[in-house]
Length: 607
Image 1 (tube, helix red, strand yellow):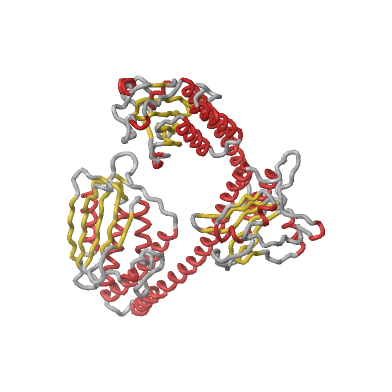
Image 2 (cartoon, one colour):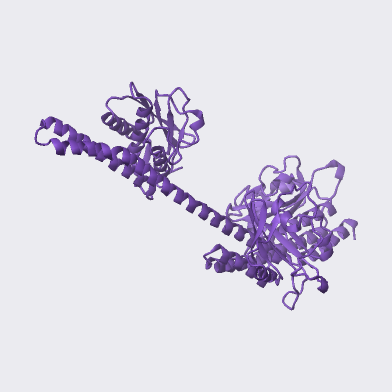
């Protein structure tokens, strides 16, 4: 038997052994391809798996291609194997039959040949491909395993022998079995995680959820002491734990168990594995005591409650993970000392147990973060409520005395004063009351949940309606209008709400420039983003640069007696239109509010 074939048979045995302990399917597939290509002196090889969401074969392992092709290079599949030039790779996948082409002529004459080589640097003189068929369901094909020898003068007349082709087929079967095992394990894991989520969904409080998480991991792994810790400033404090943590809490009621996090990871020594995880985000699954005690951050001591000196008990295994949201580490989940029994024969945490542990870490992190956000929001609501009450009270106190003075004047002089003066006083009193009602209405708009009905409108008609509304509302203001939008362009708007937005703009402009105020309304199309822009500009002083990032925030105002809600409400309205609003003016040259709204194309609004 040729040396090459012996090498491939050795690779076959290695792949068969690896199949028993398959964990990371991509690592195994990559190993199969590399060994096969190297042993058979092939120019290149690859395994591609079918992605249902894209209806494509995606490269998951390769040797001799470009590494960047992994997870990016793909072939469209379709459903017609007889369609010309669909590609040899797609053809093998759809027909579920192996294909061995022994020459350039055979390759280029095959009806499925693309007419070009995907691998631009080479021309294949021999090509073999084999479908990866699900061993448990022969109707399902996972993907394809393919190898090729390129036209290369230096390699001479190397070809695949019949024995090698047979071995390639067997490697394809091994890859198929590995994928099947991986899917089965993932399904079991998903089912386990699904049941965990169902259990946790019944818990309402954060304390209840964290308690349930540590209980679940103890039940799954038989860990002696699972616990969850939360970052508070530069401390890592115990939030929940079972076994010895319960005893510790009972023994020292009121004492917070914590780690100090005020250390530099680049200089730290023996800070403790738990603190190290909280500071660096490193995941750990330490399987033996020797490995644990040799870790540079092991403190060299054990908790005296769970590990009394006289017992000579030591921690045999340790698993820990950060509770992380984005780049922020908000806590740690850990467990030590897995106890062995008939159901848990391994003295360490297995890969499956570790994977569930990491899922639980994600769930714990999300639960803690949601609770933190909820508390922050509650505090914000309380603070906002105080600000609303104070602001409303302040504004009403400045208005209602004016109304009261006019009403007193009417009451005292109704018998002996000219009716013209009485009418004037009555009008002023009514104006004051109307201002008070407007204030209350403004706060209601800010506080209550907003829901608006959007109607399909011709874009040009919208800007005309805004123009007419502002002219009638503010006859003293000079207003110009510019529309650069095609007649057929439509948008979905609530015209009354859009008018409110522009009314707010003008009122703010009048506060900043009381005389000779000029306003420009512009509407333009943005074909690239499939949107229209409504632009409002004035000839006032503009927004100071230092206030640019504050003007849409609730209660921010620079005018005496202002509520600071006009632009906040305007932004709420535009957001409900699935649009956005920005202020892009220059200080000293007037404001420039730009509102972007999606163009209506029929059906849903295009954003």
